[in-house]
Amino acid sequence: MLSTKDIRKELHGASSISDKVMQYIYEEGLLKIWVPRQYGGLGYRFETGIKALFEWAETDGSFGWMLTLCAGANYFSRNIKPEAAHLLFTHPTTCFGGSGMIGGTAEKLKDHTYLINGFWNFATGAPYLTHFTLNAKITQNGKPVTDRDGREIIRSFIVPKDQAEIIPNWKSMGMKATSTYSFAVENVIVNENCSFVYDHFFTNDILDSIPFRVFADLTLLANYLGMASHFIEEAERIRPELNFKNFTASVEKHLNKIVNMANEVENILGNHKSISEDQQNEIHRYGVELVQKLSLQILTVYTQLGIRATDTHSAVYQVFCDYFTAAMHSNFRPSEDAVNFSF
Image (cartoon, rainbow, N blue to C red; front, top):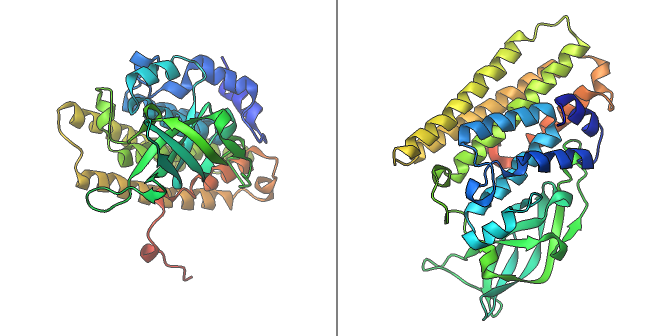
């Protein structure tokens, strides 16, 4: 079993997740925290999973982000037919991942198959995936298929890694070891069993009822708080005379809040009630405000650390770059109307 110190040493300055760390991930089943036990997963409750995501991000930004996004993609085990899920997830190295963008087309053929073509950006952990997940517009005879309201139909598909072309174009300042590459699929035929719809489940569990927006909000917030905790740990090493107790206490306070939110969501769903639109909006507004405040505080601390913190080989610089790369995720970006660039 690898310690936090071991993982940090393996991933410091790394451009990929090392084989040693990947072996640890497989052995501990970390990619399967959201996979139901009936498919060989760990079947974590929402609250337990949130705590794990925080700890992984606190260990290392790339480590936590890759696990969050790939374990999150393995959550789709719930959306595919049980016979296919059993076959896929009994293997210890099964790892889904891909893109949320709509980057291609799926031509519907006569024999319950689809012909997939397209290009998708930002597939976290691309080299470590066994299957790519993607969203595509359904076409038939080259024309878009629409629903009763005239909207183009979108479905999600699972494509084995050996049928996709990985394009190693991740050049960001942080999250380097996540290898968040693009991928392309050209003339690949996929059976209907390897397609799914986000809100259509074949399992019967409370987690199935969690709105995707809430799931995304709370899992990403756990990552930001985990990286912030690691950042202040490294900052203290550079300037131990500064008092960072308020920062640490704030991280703990907000972590407790999102854990409580996750627990409350499960309790509501467990009582056969739904998460209202107002409740979802409240969670999201909290997330937007938290990320803005957290980012400002990390910048404030960083400017107190001096020139040593700009060393591109230092741990604090890596955590700083990881955090602000992750913070570029559009999920919590405030609206343009709420931004004032004057000073």
